[in-house]
Image 1: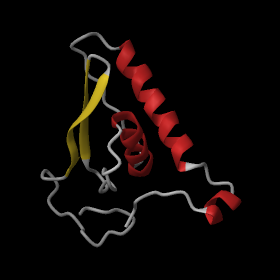
Image 2: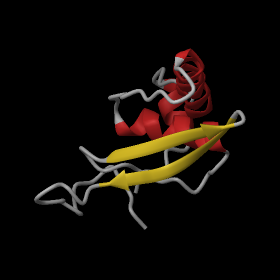
Image 3: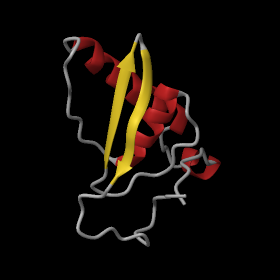
Image 4: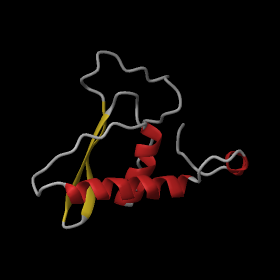
Length: 106
């Protein structure tokens, strides 16, 4: 499972604190959203781990778990409140490997 929780062993190796990483990604998403026109959209391509951490931080939803490879998520914002409209969508893929590892779909 990929709950992406801080681990002292990872910290000792110099891995970025997951809370800091989530804050950094959320700040980048906010900056992108603020630069868009009112009805604008942005396509952001990223690693699932940082996306998960950032979306958890941005929305305050700690129940968002790992993202499958090639999945799609849609985030919206209304009155400075961010929400997840679609998370971890894979219906368009011809095959999804549920034993892929390093993700969690519960």
